[in-house]
Length: 164
Image (cartoon, rainbow, N blue to C red; front, top):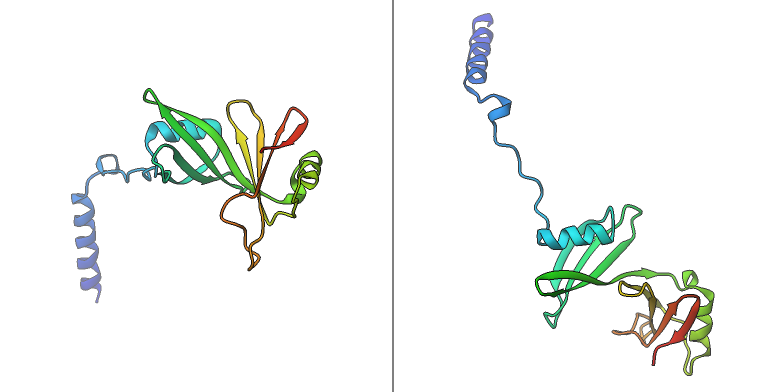
C-alpha cells in the first residue's frame, strides 16, 4: 500500500514539474461587454457604477438602447444616437412609482382632460436640458399597462406641463 501511495505522489510531482509557471499560464479573458467599447465608456460616464446587461439598436435602427442595473438595484435604459461617428446619450429612463413623481407633475396630469391614474410611469431624464418627461400609461382591460404612454408630462425647473 505504501508503494502505491509513493508512486501516486511521484506521478503528481512529475505532473506539477511539467506544468507552466503561473505567470506563463493564459489568463482568463475578462467578460466581454455586451456593447461596443465606445458605447460602454459613454454609458459608464452617464450612469456611474452601472452593470450593463444588453445593448441593441431600436426598431427603426436609428438609436442604440443600453439596459443595465445601478448599484442600488434600479434598472435603467439609456437611449443613444450616433452623429459623425460619436455617440451621445439622449435620455435615461427608469420605471418609478406614481407616488414618487413630484406633486406638481401629478397635479398637472390630474387637471388634464381625460385624466387617469397611471398603472405604469417611466421617468425619462433628457440629457440635453436636464428636464424630466414622465410617460404615463393607462390600464387596458386586463389591468396591464397600455402599449404606449397615454399622457406625457414635462417637469423642468420647478414647473410641470402636459405635453400635447
